[in-house]
Amino acid sequence: MKIATIIVRILVGLMFLFASISFFFHLMPAEPATNDNFKAFNTGLMASTYLMPLAKSIELLCGIAFVTGRYVTLANILILPITVNILFINYFLEQKALPIAILLFLANLFLIYRYWDNYKSVFKP
Image 1 (cartoon, rainbow, N blue to C red):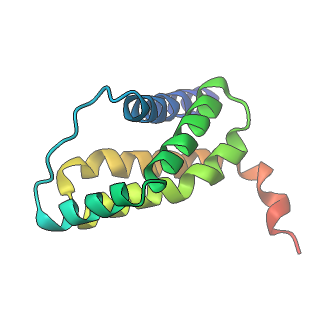
Image 2: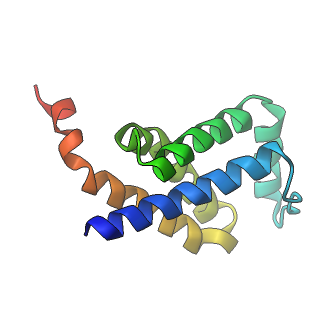
Image 3: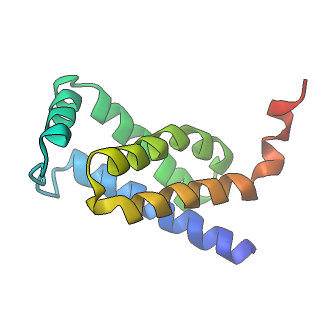
């Protein structure tokens, strides 16, 4: 189980690193929105001017934490809202990448489960 945890942690970290680095350095061309609701949502995200850089910065920091194996407990909690949003955006607006979003969300839940002993003190009265 320890090897599975390391593999999942590194794969998730590499996915987040790739997504954030390609955002900041404009390595991937922007995909055209396939439906009007997703286009409106994406336009709103870009119009906010701070939300995407903030999310991608958190993805970068958490990706580094996952790959290096340091501060994984903190990275799991920081990245959870982002993975939930990725899952919901892909479920409600653009179903093309839904399998990847589901795998990413389940991997995050798996890592939280594996590091659960580190979270026990948060839930003590």
